[in-house]
Image (cartoon, rainbow, N blue to C red; front, side, top):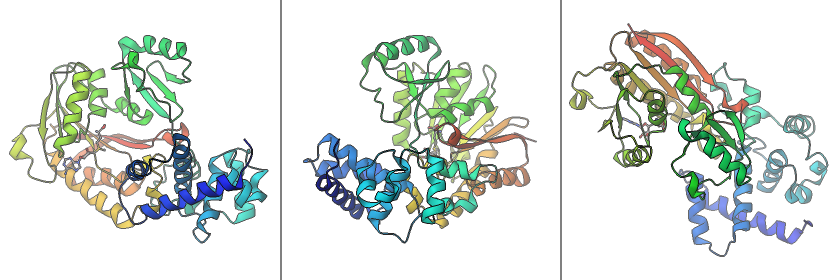
Length: 391
Ligand SMILES: C[S@@+](CC[C@H](N)C(=O)[O-])C[C@H]1O[C@@H](n2cnc3c(N)ncnc32)[C@H](O)[C@@H]1O
């Protein structure tokens, strides 16, 4: 399409208006944007797509080029995130010719010619675990992660045949895991209903840390809407599972998802893991506990890049304290010799390795294994998982 200065300026004005309205708010940007579009019904779908792209690209810059103007920063973000952009053509024409280079080369180019510092993207870079390949992780923040689905064993070939017939592009990670470019809409395809779960690749990979035997009693202590619980029951259908969360509303979503998956046999409780858990559980102990703890979510900031600008340092300490308090309560309900599976979607050592050290030193567990699920290598989220055995 021909480059129109007038159209581009208009897009930039809209972008500025959206950002000005979001300043100081601490809600997820996606929620704010949906509201903005509702209040601006004159915007067509193309305008909305464009505005969304500019904002998300802008957020991906984090704190890099903090001293530059808003429009200069937007142009830099467009340069790094896209291979073509009218905004770069108009506001940073000197960069336009190198736009189609691979991302790593564009980063190298900006380092040399524009004093770009990759570590400025995430001002908490020092907190990121040494087990994460920092440059690869930060570079990956400039790309939107893929959409992943998990297929039911019984319907995997049916789903793949349908996708091929409908010409929907996907990448097969393994027999039951498919990746799609983000923005692919599968919800609209009625024949696929109930045949898959949307679940990030790293989240799917957590199953390799959970071995369970039939008739064992397990507890998913932060079940939310049941992503991990569904995965777990898919692999270990004969296990008795208790699911709990502090939020009643999210457990309603879990009920719906379990019903759609045909799972009826499970126990469900509302449990605040910061309160006295014996009020609900008594002295009950489990053959295995999954603790997918509340965390900064920094391993998923590729999907919520606004966090690079709005996350505060105090929050990291608050999360680490919360995690230690929660795990102290949960640990009492693990049988001797049984596993506690500790999971976060964070890349910060304070929420991961340091919590694992606390569990070992203060709560009487031995670490069997721990690992980062390095989603940044596969356009997915990054997660942390540890398997600890009660002594
Ligand atoms: C990372 S999410 C769990 C995601 C879920 N396991 C899944 O796979 O979709 C963490 C959950 O911990 C819950 N949570 C936060 N504080 C809690 C508390 N004090 N007691 C119990 N659950 C809590 C949140 O409501 C949230 O649903």
